[in-house]
Amino acid sequence: MATKKESHVMLTVHVTDRLKEVPNVQKTLSQFGDVIRTRLGLHEISKGYSSPEGVLILDIVGEARGRQLQRALNKIRGIETKLVVFKH
Image (spheres, one colour):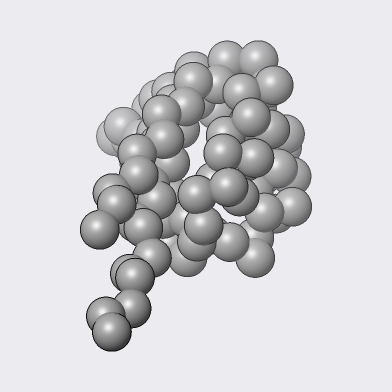
């Protein structure tokens, strides 16, 4: 009998004001650190400039916990999230 594979859960997070909201975002991510397998942060940067916006891509263990993290992040002003679940 074949075993069911775990879904791949990806949460993308758009932060519109990185400098202002980073403490709240980091606190929330730390609370869910046990289910964040991979975290990638992207923002534009050049000499003397750092974009106020940024994007996080999170690889999450478990769809239910991914949805909980999504709801927690959406409570933070200036945050927009998208959850993608790849089922097998």
